[in-house]
Image (cartoon, rainbow, N blue to C red; front, side):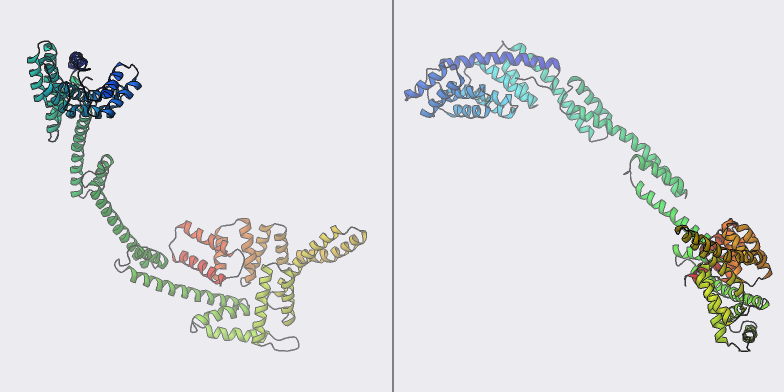
Length: 636
């Protein structure tokens, strides 16, 4: 019998000694019973007895099995053969077969020495169940064996075995009764029974303390339960789940302390919330959730507080943006007002009268822009008239007329310009050119300027020469034609030089020198004496600051010559100029909506300059409007 793991070490040792002594006694009695009945049974079939005796006399396990099985086949009611076969199976650890034959041996109730055979089978079967820790089944067969036990000494041992099984089942009253009865029947085993009774009393105390600890754990007396379990663990370290229960109580005590702390923080958060100290309340609930994310309704309260903070900030931002829009409207900074009110409507479309204010600001900005545009075109037209540039004046005043036909004296000025154009378009043979021809000249002039910007010198020369043929001296065609011819000559010269390098020979060098002389010397004179050509030459050799100086002087002398704005702006850009003078030139180009290269770069520079100043004046707004307007027109 293996020692019980619940009692103390001393009790376990005593139990082992007692069990070994009892087992020795039982072995002696079982041997005597078996020996006495080996040849006592006389079944009618002699062959069964012969096989049975052969199995008893054999020393080989396999032969024993074969002999006992043969005896049982011949006489299935041969109880002693079933018992011996069960012992062989038990020796082989084939417990299922051993159990089956022991139960058969116990069930046979006929033949000689039947009570002894049934006692041996019941007792051995009880010990088999006990070894498998099936104490309930063991008790049943010990009780069967007790009904057949022949002597008091053997009955004392049976009571001891029953006491140990009840002990294992923690039926301490039954165990005590059996132990006391066994001690009365035999004085030889008295010392073992006394030691068992002491261990039994200790186990009873442990079991009662365990039961008590489990009960009070359901309440709130965790410390008392912890003391009881610690005492059990001291006496029997491996008793049931005592270590796990102690760990559970420790965890519960720690959590109880933690809950006390979190409850205090929770109440503090409620107080902050009640006092409208939302930031402090949020911080408190966040601290709680960091330790226990399921504590009460801390999570819901935190979400509600964050929502309230968001709504509060949202209302404040809306009010600030609305106030900003009102102030901008009072200052007639319509663009700024539009941005502010659009920000309000994007967040809350129904906030106060923001939508109505936005529409008013847009209408005012549109009216202001239209007025500024008309004023600008009107001023350009007046300036062109002063410069006697009738074509430019006609274009500018026509724009004014298209926007507002009744603007100031635009009708009178238009009539005067048309009359001037009609009178100036008379050829040398007194042929008068009508308005249709003037419109054609203006179109050719614009197209030639476009090719100049594209540096397509051949096409620009062709168009300018056509204009010169139709109307000699038209606008600044002479200057443009000179510039275009110069650039065309330079490009031809580059072409000739490349051809000259590929074609080796004296004749090529000779004709190349002649061509160079014919082109270069007239060109040199042209560059030296014509300012516009000289500026162009400086541009070609990379002296952009010198070219800028020439263009500035020409622009001061002829403010109405729009062609000067583009090269001067390019020179400023290349030189990296961003001073006030350059900024004014860039702004003027954007306001006049001139079709020039690098337009987007000019727009960006103008916008950045005004933004850098932080200006909200109408001048800044107009600059932005001119940039966006010119960009839109250019894309069209």
